[in-house]
Image (cartoon, rainbow, N blue to C red; front, side):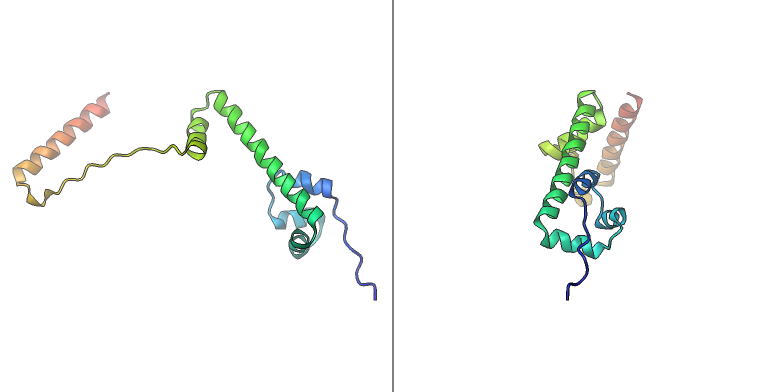
Length: 125
């Protein structure tokens, strides 16, 4: 018994497609096969998996290249995002906590007035 003929998937096409970071469902739809076949090939076909990984990694590298280009062009959003992703930078928020349970009403009102004054100055600036 010979079984079903093997469905051939062009590995160059697979590699090119995977640069776009597709899901297994999208790969299956592109080649007109089932998701199960894609999962099976990823697990049991080293050449398939090699093309798959190479495509995905090449696509990520290409995306990173574009991100760096945007950052180098002065895109502040991209500069901040890359700094957070690659350099561990983060937004710093300082919160000062005071235990107000032992403060008098006059002291609480005074603190609130000071904070409101600071907020008004910051808003006006």
